[in-house]
Image (cartoon, rainbow, N blue to C red; front, side):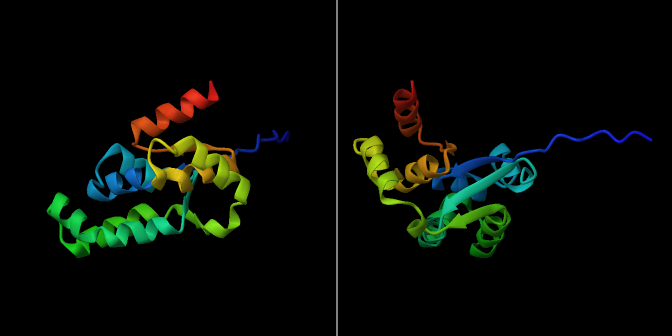
Length: 141
């Protein structure tokens, strides 16, 4: 019997920002939610710890926009976040924060963390912020 050697499969790391997570929470039947909830075999989703705080401080807004109950929002949140690895901001070296600030300075300073993570982990940033994505692409090309 000949056993074929299988190729190792590497999961793709992706930094996920708040826009994407909010979209997934607001509509768990969307493509975004489907990817976040069901693609953990292919992707290693990463986010900063403060994303959890960002969500909790916006519960009222999420309830208002979605017309869901707070209980439903929290269930959606659980389903979306369970496949995201949260990493403390303290683990990211200062140089990455400095570089990220330069990239986002005239876009949205709140995105500095996501850009720093993307730079640190040398991976893509998944964001719904078109202006930010345009800035990152411009920098790369």
